[in-house]
Each structure stands twice: as C-alpha cells, then as structure tokens.
View (cartoon, rainbow, N blue to C red):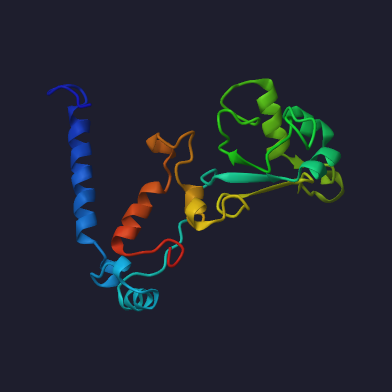
Length: 210
C-alpha cells in the first residue's frame, strides 16, 4: 500500500522505489557474471567448476552475527530425563514413550510459538523449559570454571542436525541464517535470505562455492 501524494511518507515511498530499481539493475548487470555469462544449469558439474574458476568470483562464506543463526536442540530422551529430571519435567514431559514425550529435535532459536520452550507466550512453564533446554550445567564452575551442556542435549546450527542436514532441508546450513523469526515474514528477521538470490543470480551454487 502506498501513501497519498504529499503525505509524510512520500519520501520513504520514493526511496523504496529507487532501492528496488537499484537492485533490479544490479541483478541485471551481474547475471551469471561468475560463470562468464553461461547459465550454471546448462553446464555439467565439471564445466561449471571450470567456468567459475575462469571467472572473476571467489568462493564465499556467509557469517552471521550474534543471535543470527537458527539453533536446533537434539534430545536423547532417556539420558536427559535420567540426568536432569527437574529440567525434563519443566517442559511438561514425563516419559520417553507415549503422549508426554519430547520430539527428537526442536528449533531452539528462535523456538516456534507452540513449542514447549516458546519465548512468545510469556508463560512461566515455557520460560522454564527454555532455560532448561538452552541452559548449561554449572555444577563444575567452582572447580574449573566450566560450563557444560546438560547431558542428553546437543545444541547445533540448523542444517547440521540429523533432521535438517539434507541439502533440500538445510541448504548446506544457509537456512540457519535466513528467516529467523516466527514464520520469517518480518524484514528485520529475514537475515541472509535475500542474499542467496543475488549470489545464485551471479552464478554461485549453494553447497559448492557458497
């Protein structure tokens, strides 16, 4: 929706239009530039590597900032329950078989709205579960200054866990730095999602040189 002509946001609309036009021209001017104008999809794997090597581009790695990656927690139910009974209970779980059983994986950051460790509900139970699963065992801090992950839990970047490590699911961990928010609709939580379009437009291949 656009603002009325002469309205207080008219300048913002004009700036947005100019930005969109700039991005359009950028994509047009860099189309397949990394593969010397050749469509990567039309090239064999060997020819693609050869063309990319002759082109002006270098392999690239995207590095997110603090709190800029989706995290997955893998749960070994029996180990977590046996070693952290109170933490296990705080999430509403009581058994490793049947209805009140944790899934093998959860999105830990940012957790879904309906997840036991949701941070959007404001409910005490959800907050305790988040702290239990995201927190560390501090029992050895006095002895050696060590913080260790609670037994039965393994927190990792999305795209590296058992349930997300396929290329179709995790895009070689690119999904971990894209659409961070709940549903990923807000611009401020999209992270690196838009960058992939520009890289691929230039001739990069996710999981090969990106």
